[in-house]
Length: 273
View 1 (cartoon, rainbow, N blue to C red):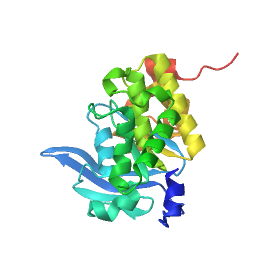
View 2: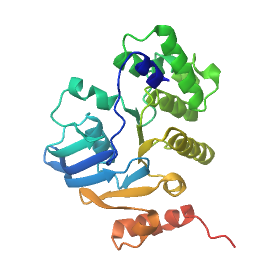
View 3: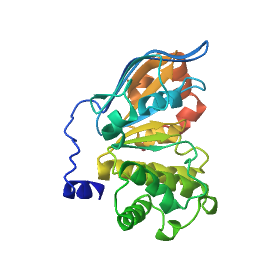
View 4: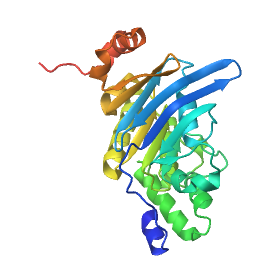
């Protein structure tokens, strides 16, 4: 919807870049004397769902925040759609930032705004001159795209269940017709049925809209169900990236404990008889 409006107003958004959607090289993050990342490298392919896993304190969310500009790394390079982001102002990166959407942990909705008003926040930020009625139509469409019923649009986050709040967060993340979606622990706190439904929604959106998805999760079911590749954070860097089967062939103790432990074996697809 927004692309059509931009075309009518002669605003050109270059979507021709065919290299890695995200490229991180030599990243270093620290908080005082605590070094979280050291010489971290990662490439995310266009059109894939990549799951990012690691133990507590390995800096999964810090990595995401470094990519989207909420965390300033000590060293390294971050490129999204081939554009370098570090050391540049918000105004210089606005054309890249409008091409991604973010679902933070817990949804991070504004409690004093309705679902529709939450969805309109990024639209107002990036397109302040857009007609108000059109903003409302975009918001209604995104609410439905997230799997919420139309009557959820005028409700406040406190009136929604946990699963519905996650979907409202997805609706807001999709507000700008992004090509890249960041999801931080999207199934945390959901029951198994709700988590499976959210996984299905993520895969459906990725296939329908041609999204690249950067997904931080602890959910082994999610990794098996929808992730094309998995990046493992340990030892202050990405120690391995690949399919789950490729990771299982590695002898790193954390990888083996994570994927071959009791929970990992239960989440793995069972062979058909």
